[in-house]
Image (cartoon, rainbow, N blue to C red; front, side):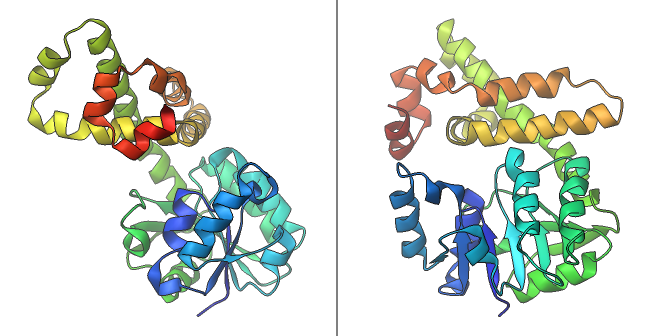
Length: 283
């Protein structure tokens, strides 16, 4: 298998690098490693997942054939620029981050200036549970080679969608308007219903199919709100580039970003819609 380095070890990094098929084969570096308050916990998760720990980015990239970037949206360009100072030539940099096409092109410029190859990758479904079966879209001048590498690494659903850097990301960004917009609407509806003391009536009006999704949508905002808000910021950048209004996605980003959402949920709603381990993290 190719020597693979993961920049970032959040939800996506852990889901992919920690897949059973990769036990002992992947290494990672995350900026949390440099934070004394977080390093021990992240290191423990890496060891439990069988993922190698690099002391710094330079060590991570040494001899890596393929580099997979899975950082937060606001760190995507910074990660590529940092990697470009030490990656060397003729490596493959697969950017999985959920950012606007223009942001991907900015990141690709840094990598391609080194003589390495940049692949735009879009993650098209939640990674938790799916791991290497998560659907991926790939684009760029070397999209087919990127697809081959991902298949070689064990990814099971990889499809090329264009020859331009940003083609894959454009699809992901536009999909996020719907997915993350609905999540934000769910949270705002539930909070307002709770404030108005009409939760049961609103849930009845929505119907059982909607009610079944509320817990999941609420969890995504409570646990991953900041990251998802950063992605919606990138959606707004894309809409700006298309000369389209951005008010709706910026409002959705504000809901995702608002950490006080957890604090405003009543105990009853938390117990009804959030798993116990999630409730502990926001108590």
